[in-house]
Image (cartoon, rainbow, N blue to C red; front, top):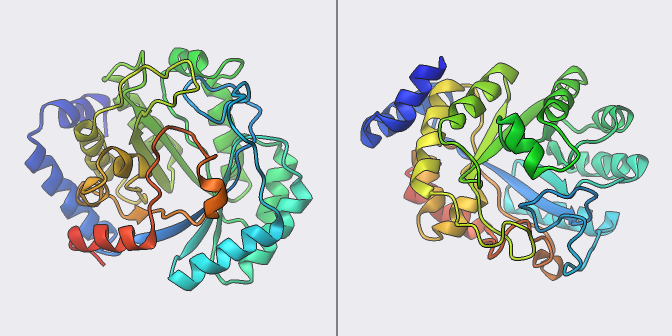
Amino acid sequence: MRRAEILHLLFETPWEELRQRAAATLAREKGSHVFVRGLIEFSNQCRRNCRYCGLRAPNRKLTRYALDADEILAAAREAVAGGVDTIVLQSGEYAVDAAWLAGVIDAIRCLAVPVTLSVGEQPAAACALWREAGAERFLLKHETADADLYAALHPGHTLAERVAQLRLLRRLGYEIGSGFMLGLPGHRPESLADDILLAQELGVEMCGVGPFIAQADTPLAAQPSGPVDLTLRVMAVLRLALPWANLPATTALATLDPNTGQAEGLRAGGNVLMPSFTPPRYRQEYRIYDDKNRVSLQDVRKAVEAAGRS
């Protein structure tokens, strides 16, 4: 799909026509099934200084935590008992002990579900060890395909480094997931086409798009949230551009529109939901953005039923 075609779909095609095309592609390529990934946010420690994220290292108002292996396994067992098909281990980016996490991955695999990692950019040796231990997927969002904006939002880091890490993960045998935000301060709407083209070029197996939501303890605290309606349009275009990919209806959609956000995301071409199984005592400290909706299995069932899916 070319850039001009993507821009036409994003900004000129009537919404109902676009939604119906995405729905038809989804039905043909993926069917009606919605995958349910159990999210365990096992640590909010982070060494980076991303200007939009509440986990950023300079944030002194956050109580840092890290689950031990037993806590993670207990949460994973709860998720599997509830029917999830994958466990997603997510954290801030920090120097996690590679051997320890490999042991956790191996233990979760005994529950007969795949493991996805979302732990930021990590050394190649660690990523190789985790793949050997049984992790099958790695989620690493590129956030924005605008290299200048990426550098401004991630001091000391570049988009090229991010893309290189995604390519490394592919070489190591992972299914890779990426994604991006819309509505970031300084973001040009037309650069959304570049986000979609980058995901297409990488051939990602999963791609998430969500609206920017501010966090009070960051430099972007006063900025408005990204628009939900544009998020849905981008999801529909992603379904057309990446018909093979799994597309989540993100928690950010559920946060800005608690009643129908995720159901509308499924109608726009999404086929993944990610309820949280982070132990309740830690959830409020995983503050990537404010007022995060803690999607439960009950919320998932409601969204799936509302979208007419299974």
